[in-house]
Image (cartoon, rainbow, N blue to C red; front, side, top):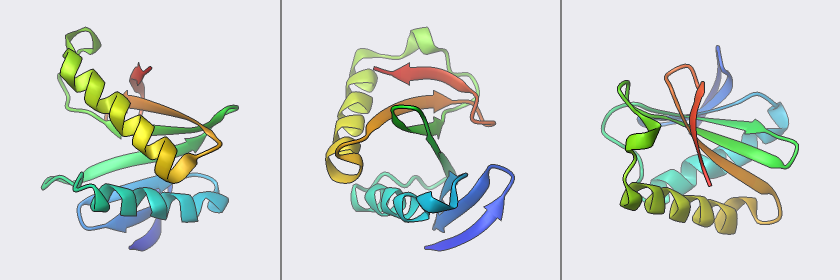
Length: 115
């Protein structure tokens, strides 16, 4: 995995996946997130961006979703899969810290928080 600066902060790059992070203390966590994505075969054929940011409760993981996404149109099985992803991330990486999983536009503007 390579690490370099970009307009969303620093980033860890592995293949088609880029994990952005602002705080330099989070580089190891961003790398773990990239390894998790690869380990669970979540890296798509198209370039994929994730943003890791700190919140008062822990961390927010923002995933860029396609352009014509409408939050009210998300299917039950998609929401369930995202909840399962959040639980796996909590168990394998974030343990004692709070974690928000957010679907975002291509500028990381939140569209839907997975609860």
